[in-house]
Length: 404
Image 1: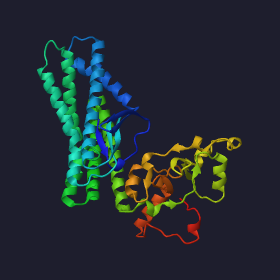
Image 2: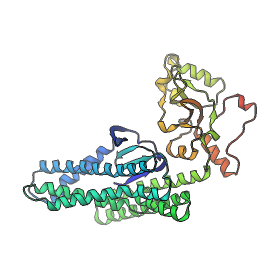
Image 3: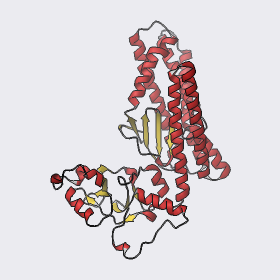
Image 4: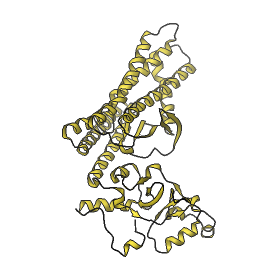
């Protein structure tokens, strides 16, 4: 179960997550896939792991201990993530929240660490916390004796050993694992180039992921062990995440210091939430080339996003009575940014699907522009060709809505 941080947010919180509350001011969420982890761990502990260590307890007792150990491990993962987030906050790195899911935990960091020292300390905070939990649990299991039941001692011992294993696993030298962050911090300190360091850590992560896939395949074929399939799943996840980080580093290199305001479409056509679908389509048909529109309230504050494909299912006879608000999708907080925000950072944490999503550019709280996937691709293409990313439109174009 890997833990990983997502600098600059990485992705928005996993969809399908529910809010559990706040700890130390940090929002904690759980993805529905966490139930699969809880169920699988409980089953393995109650049916195989704990019975292999001791004999005597009834199946019901093993199940109680298994569920308790699985929950304890999830709490340990949360402590691991909180350590990352608390240390990040001390260095001025914003934290959007923590999500627990199928393969562990995700700390969503809003900003990049300010320097290699901060990067290193944020990365090591989680594994050190896991080591601390593991040592304390193993010490408690060693000192506990009658009248404490042997099943309780075995459960605590398993929890301690597992935390130590997780600490070691997370220190494997490849992004997005904590060990990959350590590699990045070291390379950053040595070269002074953060983007090159991030690329190096991502390439290392790809290698680690491939090694886990091959190791898992060998274990499955040679031993027929289900643990090999788990290793292959982890390896696939790490390799996929490392590829995403490598692409993100390349995007940052291309966009450099480009600001959102350099590529946005100013004064876009916006759809008031109270409009009917027919009203929006009438405006779109009059000359707007947009396929996706920001939805605003009466104060011209962006609240959602709606695309032409969102409106297609509405029957023609109902378009005058169905409100835009009924078809709009919520606008993620990360997709509401000021014009001076870094375009690379926004692009790394906001999913922009062509014709479906947009970034709302605001001044204060009022909408002043939008950025779409087309704007982002155009910026990358112009950068690759050596053209200035900021394009000055001809006078006649300045008087009409732009095309995303």
